[in-house]
Image (cartoon, rainbow, N blue to C red; front, side):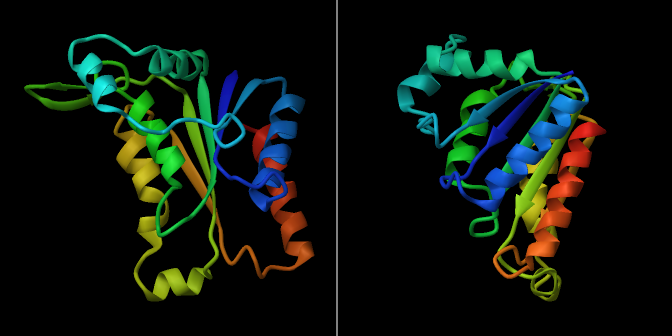
Length: 192
């Protein structure tokens, strides 16, 4: 398969980057073609400007959006890797979704409601969280971690097979736990 990985973390020495390296290694070992979209390294502009929106309403695709959509449509499957910030995805990733997943490409409105248009085979969302699983359970916030991306964006846009993994308390886990996570993520790439 062709797999587009959208990676969103500003620190190339982060655990998120280690996840990127290991899932990429597993994907390559399995024979998949991959493209990595590192939003911070690319200095991606996440702003949907008034002129961009005006062009979209006129049925025109601004060049910066068309370039991103071309990469999206190249892929058969998608992987997103990011840290949980304020119970959500980083603003840069939210901006990528706003720009790329446009009406007419990713979804459309009809008299029957909204229809997702993306034909990707599957999507995987890997999220790191600073809080413990217990914290999120106790505050009834587990669904806030993944649902905006998994259900509110990817499933909404038509991708039927969307899965996620959340790695809790990432700043406080042991080195052994980190190695186990990374080994599992590489295996996810091999079996994607």
